Image (cartoon, rainbow, N blue to C red; front, side, top):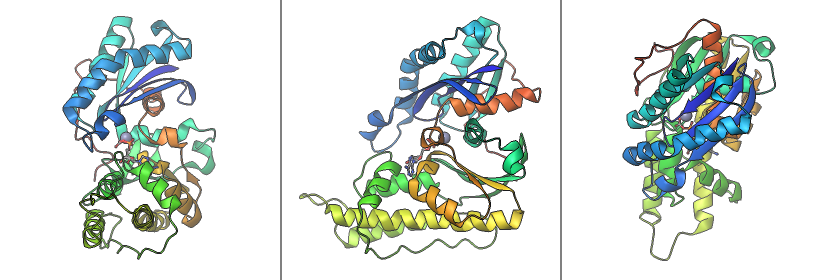
Length: 342
Ligand code: KG4
Ligand code: ZN
């Protein structure tokens, strides 16, 4: 089964051609990050306008890379939520138009399920090794969700952030440290250059359950930066060594709290494996520390498949279609869509 997967929920215009939920024939991603970096974060109106300008070329390039025509496809799949309303609309309407005009079925995909299914694009056969049940930690710009996956399409939300998402913590932290947007990659880079020596940041304490909290950490960073006269940035620029050391301690606090809660949830749920996914899963320190401290196999997609892409949407669609699902033409966007809600 060949699926065209389209993703426009935030600031990546993406399309991919995926066979059997596994083989990537094309994976085209046009990032708007540079445009939004001028504003220090994603501007929704700019994002939807940019999707509109780019989507046709991105889809055309994906088909070209795959050596496919629309008639070679079996289905068109698209993210219908969660995400920015104006951005989601561009993808959903493009997918509907393409599918309708080509006489193809069409299916809406939950973006969060997409992040999870990025793991199935890798070479391992997760269904048999390590096999269900699995725990999935989705860490992105908008979500920090711990999801118990008992089988394909069977999700239960067991933990989530009470305030900011992990990606948001990276993005806001980078703004304080003058490192630009998106914040994850430059914080990782600065941390890697650090000689250490910075006092650790206090770890957030969330009583009971498997929830996370990052807003206190962000405030602690801001207060420390202010007390050292690093924020607002002085006219003669920031001391790079101090920025690196702060980034290192800040990243370590985020990573430690993600890993601590997840390891506890892995034990309590008795799962066979952990899927680590979403944009923040591209973080090298998080990947290493999770592998280190988690007692079950950790399955984590390549960094390029962790951040938003169309391949993960094509992969997730495959399992929904296999189970007999498809969408009606009146499917609407759902900007606030969750996963396995309790
Ligand atoms: O999944 P994603 O591409 O988009 C959303 O669905 O939100 O995640 C984007 C988030 C941003 O907050 C970005 O700073 C973060 O993922 N991110 C990283 C890294 N690469 C991207 N965070 C930490 N380290 C990275 N290397
Ligand atoms: Zn995402």
